Length: 302
Image (cartoon, rainbow, N blue to C red; front, top):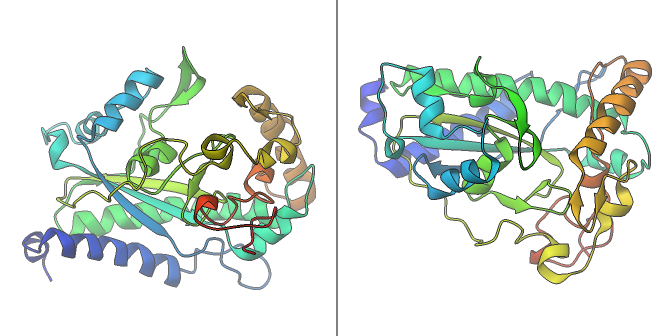
């Protein structure tokens, strides 16, 4: 099928086509691999959501974070300066790649350092996520739709915001939130329908796909602490004491990740990458939205 023919498909078909391309790549690519001596996939089946580039939440996020956060239309037109796209023409494609059960089981047992599977999933799963985005961009462009993955654009940066300290020019978690895939927890992790133990990726494309409905009105809707005043399990799980009832201390978290877990991963597993994930495992929101079911403290269903 040519790109021209694909462009004449109904928007619903475009949604299914994009989701199918993502799911097929995740299931069939040999790069979805933990790189043990025996093959083991790094990430589980994806969640995919869509949002319009003109969604007012993106402007709210930019106003809240301030510089360096960029709007979808700024990112797209910076990547394609001759396109002159309007925000309404753009679709943000958000992808959630959950950790596997084995990875979560291993990390749940840890109390100070991340498990080897967690580090491998963070590192090799991250490499796979980058390849998935490149695959999706190529698939879209082959069909005639210009696309860019913001986190891998040459102008992506991390700088200091006045309100939040370290902030990036694009947030994968915020894109997932706007795209109906989840809300934020006390530790700032995104709680999705498949839980908080996951990584997010996104692509912005000039393609007409209807937005995914958001089944929430508050950005903390899925967090037991904010919704019901209960839980706080992530506070106890954090080895750096970077989480409290007041939220997440990003600087203390970063010091632990880069100053403790990265040297640990380098010396114990031969992988030069940071990672922790203790607040994402052994908690009720590890593998699901905890408001939709009853859970044991480790996140498994009763």
